[in-house]
Length: 92
Image 1 (cartoon, rainbow, N blue to C red):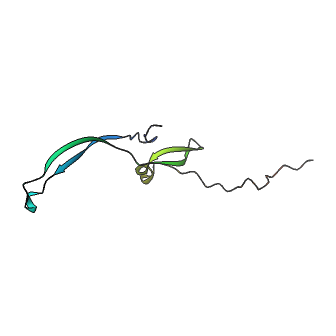
Image 2: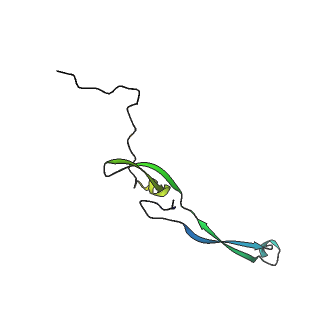
Image 3: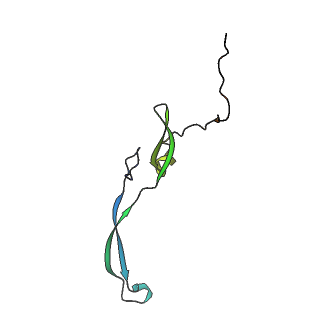
């Protein structure tokens, strides 16, 4: 499953992890030096949410930022239980 927000389309981003060694000049050293750069990925903060889409309830994978912005209308709470008998029409 891809790590992409279904509303905003935000996906993974590329970046680097930079390794430094040495003591900073401010602290009395000769300065820090980059010793290695490795690739890394920044993953979006995806959450699985029940949302109302076109009048029906379905699960979506959206970022936390989209939820905070109010782009997702959450589904209403379920008020009935399976144990409760459903009302049947009276026979004439």
